[in-house]
Length: 613
Image 1 (cartoon, helix red, strand yellow):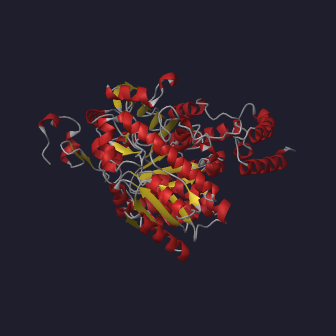
Image 2 (cartoon, one colour):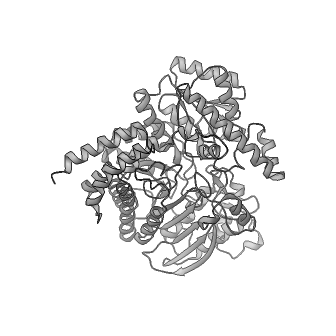
Image 3 (cartoon, helix red, strand yellow):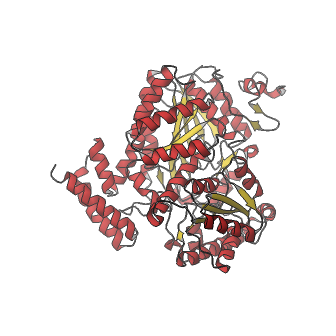
């Protein structure tokens, strides 16, 4: 394409002329192939460049024209000028330099060392007393800060698949606990078909259930159908419910989208005395200006956000109150109900719903994974070669052949998951497993058994990388839900270990003021140095998660520390602490009866196995 004059002579000119970026239409395409574009000819810099382009590819991003990747308003860069400046910088950097990014804006480049990260980011951070949406938006309006969710600003989003396995595992654990492991003949109701919630229908279908999901935005419904995450849709509530009940009766796994507000769908279900087997929600309730009130159409909502945000906010809170009240009513009628970490309960609680937290959060089902340092590890083929992903799937199936849950996931992913942008995979791997797999991948790249380098990362929703009292760290045994040291330690460890890039963020998932979290990007390019750094990262990253949970008193984490040889200076104290905090958490009502019985059983197992050692 013809390069506009203002870009002639700039490093970004090469990518414009190659068709990877159109500065006039703001269209970005994922960069594929083996040709390097950065002047350093270093994959440790080419990698972050490609992941930045990947997250803004229209196949991947929710609203790429506005740099929004997912999660309401989660951006990849603060502005298009900043995006272009980041690209220019990456393309012209040397292999021992580090780019520093503050809330999506490149602010400095320093001469460092090849063992140091190539990019360091801090996104949307505010001093705690000022950490609320009102102040954030004032600063955002001045161009001083921007919102980057979790993996949007960290350039680690891989499309809807990135949340798919987490949704699959969460709902799968709910099915195991309440329905014997299968959702066959079960109805699961939720709302939200955006870049996060869009994983729900396919996850439920994979588990054999019937998904009935509401969304007010027809574009999101169309997007999910085009990527095969949703089977069908209607704008008629009666028809949608009839379709869902018929599929449930026939025990047919399927997914149905309905163009409607969540509140309207739940009111209809209650009126018809229809109780879902599982009820949850993934609307963007973390951001009051993104959540759509029941009294407005989607088009009216967009207009009112601009013309009268105060009125919009009032309507939004009123709708959230009604939303949670309806969920509570269905819970009382027998629906297995939980919030999927969008802060809906807290918003409703703050506006008068005293029983909002009778609805548990998703950690009721996911916590056991985190206790072992297990979480959403992910990777992409940086050259865009799908075969590399499928070859690595086979490596996983061989390497972890005794892991039935992993095998089930990989087979389902083969059958159902379409790649978006660069081909990618996400698999929940734990402490020791990530490093083992990473070493094999490095050797395969070095030996030419893969088409090119592999990028590794993960969601910020991981064992030790986040503090979010209404989601990932809700209901910690020792009451340490709001302790923010752990994600900062995670960020520091991964930086010291030499991750290709590291990110420290605020507000992802539950919104500004409610979460801080850290992320990584690691490029495995076949060199010995890249492998050395990667193996350190793949050890300390889940390792600090195990340590975090061990210090909170989880017996399963204590067992992992013992079996994996993780060094903890005050370990002897933690055994006694575990016994104490389990009872305190139960007495204070901070954990469910199920969790209490589970961790008590884990403690008995730990004492039986290690008390004589």
